[in-house]
Length: 161
Image 1 (cartoon, one colour):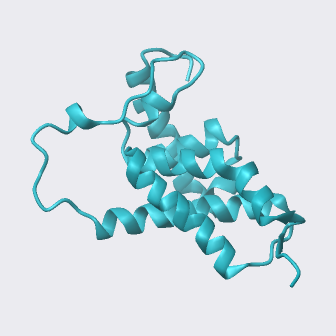
Image 2 (cartoon, rainbow, N blue to C red; image 1 turned 90 degrees about the horizontal axis):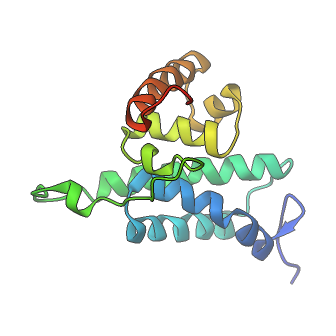
């Protein structure tokens, strides 16, 4: 039986190449390593079982990011805490404050801003590409980016965002 190909890559090559991207999307969205690992596995399981056709690697990457976001949203919807945490800040995932990496600041934002800013800054997508991935109008993405940058600027503590 021939091995399935995804935009010219084998399944193993896709996993190796996009582990960081899918993992980062899941961690940024969920703010919890264990939950992110569950969603990460679900994304690659879905790729393997569905075996969708992709036009090119960019289409594959966009699909993986979109499925990652959907998996995280489903996880959050299905796993709401039964009791509120007394102090969520004590258990929050933290990144070191690195001037070159804004991940720690992104984690402090609301998910609607966190997702578009992650795709814009970390994955280097253009606004129209982000709109396609998050399934929102371009104007909405522009507004989310503008407002998110303002919030990020306050968190990050500067004007260089």
